[in-house]
Amino acid sequence: MWGDKRYHTLNYELRKEFGQKVMKLSLDGGFTCPNRDGTIGHRGCVFCGEEGSGEFAGSRTLSIEEQIREQKKLLSNKWKTGKYIAYFQSFTNTYSAYEDLRKKYYSALSQEEIVGLAIATRPDCLSEDVLDLLTELNEKTYIWIELGLQTIHERTAKFIRRGYSLETYDIAIEKLKNKNIRVVTHLILGLPGESKDEILESVKYVANTNTWGVKFHLLYIQKGTDLYEYYLKNPFPILGRDEYISLVADSLELLPKEMVVHRVTGDGKKELLFEPRWSLDKLRVLSGIDKELKRRNSYQGLKY
Ligand code: SF4
Image (cartoon, rainbow, N blue to C red; front, top):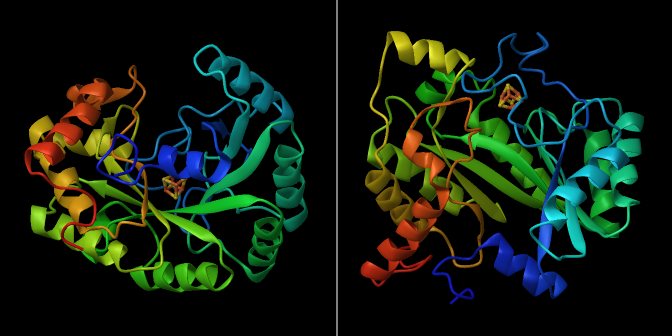
């Protein structure tokens, strides 16, 4: 239905849009996060590592141009592609002065072969100035904004120290939608204390918002995070591989067909990953999801 997949992948969507494979280059724009600098919190989300969820991004000691050059070089060994999306991934990428944001976004866009921007941020970091800037960019190029919702459940949101309410997400998504800006919502499957039904409630909720895309993450425990310390003292159940695969298949069935699925598994750094170790075999998880959908004779949108 979507190439060789039973769900609407980002790869499929970008090929349709650009007529060829388009890769993302992960950048560190040198920003921080209000959930870490004391504005909202000091220690950040409980699972957030030192690199602000940008473990695979370029180095913040390099300029945007240098990071793009370096990342392109790394990818060119694997993919002979000429088109890239510059992905501002680490920390909160709309959390800075207007001029600084503008300079960094345009600097990325002005590099050769960059056809768009992806900007990861928080729904409480979209001031009117930022929205104007994003609107301007959206008229010039292909962009999307990523929001880390993770769960709709207030109890879990408190535990993970997300630092904003579901209503804040709803307002942000409406504002972005009104400007025709694409939004990608992140959800984490397997957060402590959440039942399968609760996880699927979050998926259903997101399926019915105006989000353009979704990213499913597996909860993974990374050394050096507060979640790691918590887990050592209060071990909680971690999803097994088959359980996770089944949950992703259930989730995909609940999404509308047009929703773009950016990710269906986690991506922890090998040396930092504590649990679940099975997630390191990403290909096995991906093919397990394909097999499970095939076994069920199912596909994205079946139960939407
Ligand atoms: S909002 Fe993002 S960068 Fe900020 S603490 Fe949470 S995960 Fe880390």
